[in-house]
Length: 308
Length: 306
Image (cartoon, rainbow over all chains, first blue to last red; front, top):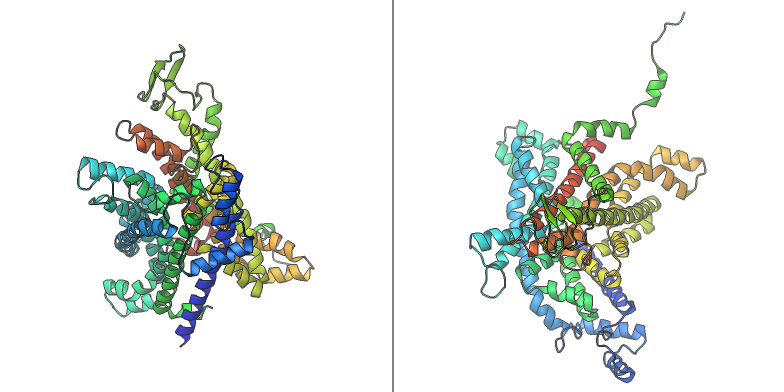
């Protein structure tokens, strides 16, 4: 019962947050200097007025906002000015799955590498193994994705020929992209896991377990792991958000048709509805991830529930 | 007769300040100290190096001296002697000089945005933590909402507004980066505000603002310093990503990010173009992160090691 109330209140908060974000982006876009039609030079005044009227830009701002909201609720993100003849829904439906796919595969790679490395380093704390692994993780954090990506491409695609260099259809270049993202975040996750595992391992119940003669491996995986993994679970929401942002870089390097290219173009061309649509879709994804993470955390650690 | 006690009271009174203790602990951490000196050296070289005679203009092109090897010398069409410490790029520009000038931009942008985020985050967090109650939960709910905004995307949107002014852009990025700082400071202040020294300050009739600025904020300094040290490299990475995507520094000007981008485009024919700036950039971020880790251990003995 208490859990249900907690979940419902978190859901309500997420929806409220989404409304705030939609509102902020709407007014940011509408109050920005310049407009989507300024690109087409020397448009006669009456044509401009007609175009503004067609897209409802001649109405007072609150009315526009209300219209925008009612469109959003119906799932219509509006036309894309930068991609003539396409709606924002179509552009996003084409690019978003690619970015999301890269992000999710990247996250899986990051977890597969990061969590065991972190647990292992914590188990071997303050030994050469620990320092070596953590230095490696630090290098991973410091080398930006846009350095790793071309390097991976050079080595695995051009020199070794294991993967394709670029492109999406019938190509394996996506794996290098996901690997780039995964390596970067695995470094973060390894550090995070190590830190929280050390926290848990220094607690009394672990000492009790050890004193009772529980095998070290069992202490590590049965007693400490559940508590040690909680901060990593909490990090998954922000990580996925970051991964999708990072995928913009990877998409550029490997020529993958994700949202990145569209979004950067939209930003430079003031393609407002595409910008807002992208932000809305990403915000929904992030809020949903955070919501999911909170629910999982409440399940992992009952103490979190009583926090609010 | 009183027994003579040989105690120097002034020494007890003086004690050992947090800053001194932390500095002594930091000095023992050789990795952090090397990082500190490395970072200071890089900063000084980038800012003072170009003032030396013999460091060429980073944007002067020499069409006849393209892709020169490191440590090579050449005579340009104008009959000018040019010495390339790290070689030249595809337009005959001096790579070393470009790295120095690029470093100025990258570092300045990192400091600028961090300063802005520090100011906003510390004040916001301290006010929320101090006032507590409804104001606090309202202020922190705003932070929660802003957290759900995809950061990279917000930054790209900001470039549409301030794309033509890099400095303004990074002031704005600082204005978006303050969320974590606010959370840290708020947590600290929240746990400090019920302690006796705050009560003492209040009973002296000090104003809220004075208590926050003179008594609470100085006590949050440890975690704030640590997080600041980690924010600078985060912002520098961000600048590099933006320049890589073509949204940051515009050519012919350089930053480390734009240099790496140019290098990545020509990696096969001229690997030095990528490798040199990438190494400098990587090592600088490396040093800042290690320094941040070392400071965390030094300022917060509880969390250090195990």
